[in-house]
Length: 325
Image 1: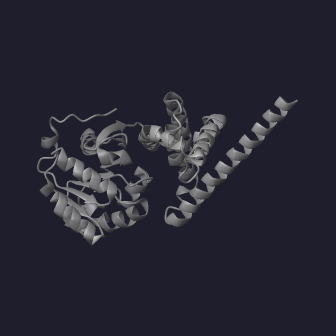
Image 2: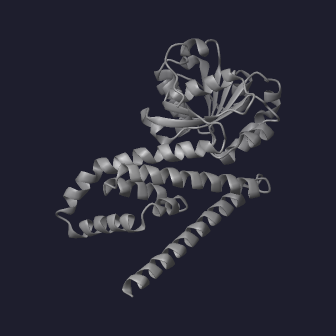
Image 3: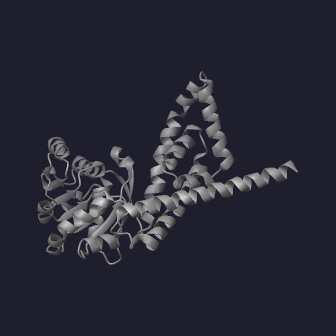
C-alpha cells in the first residue's frame, strides 16, 4: 500500500500547472480532492471538457480554470491528467501529440480505463513520462483505493506526483505489473458494495417479516449463493451488472466476509488474466475500432459465462443423480 502523508505535498506541486483533460465524474473527484487537501491551488488547475455547462459548474464550485481547448491547456501544463473515457483517449492524445513532442518533461498520468501504457505511448507520439492509474468509485467519498503503475525506468518523482494526486481521494496501491491495476480496483471496489449491502441488510430483513413475497426473494438469493458457492462470484464477473448485483446480495444476505473476500480475489485474478489475454490476442487488430473491440470482449465474456453455467448445471445434475442412487 502506497500512502502519501500530508507533509511535502504542497512543495511537490509548487509552481506546477496541472491540466485535467476531461471534467467528468472521476476527473472532477480528483480535482476536488486536490483542492480540499490543499495539494495544489485551484488557480494552478485547468479542466477541459466538451460539456460547457459542466465547465461552468466546475469553474463556479471549484474556482479552477476551464477550457474547451485541450491544446491550450496542455501547452501550459507541467502535469497532464488524461481523465476521459477510453474511446475518447485516442482523439484527445492525437490532437495533443505535436504539443507533447515539445513538452518532454511533462508528466502524463492516465486514468482512462483499459488504456494501456503501450497504447498511450503510441497515441502520444512516443511520450516517455507516462504513469497509468485506476481509481474506483468510492473515491467520491474519500474512501477510494487506486491502482498505480509506472514502467520500469520511470522517474520516481513521476510516480510520487501521480500517487499524491490519487491519494487525495483515498489510498494508493503501486503495482509491479500493469495487469494488476484492474485486480486492485476490482477487489477494492467490491468491498464497499458488500458493506453497503450488509448495512442495509437488517432493514431488508425487517421489511421481509411483513412481506411474504419479499421474504421469498431474499431466501431464494441466500439459497442460490450458498448452493452455488464461490464460483458464482467468478461467473458474475462475466455478466453485465452481475458483479454489482451479487456483491450487494452477498452483503444483504450476510454471507461470511472472509469467504466473500477470498472468492472476490480469485475472481478478480481470473478476470484480470482474461482481460490481459484478450487484449494481447485481439487488442492490436481492433485498436482503431473500439466498437468491434467492445462487442468482441462482451461476446467472449458472455460466452464464458454460458460455458461456466452449463458445466455447473451438469455437474450438479450428476451429483444429484448419484445421491438419488
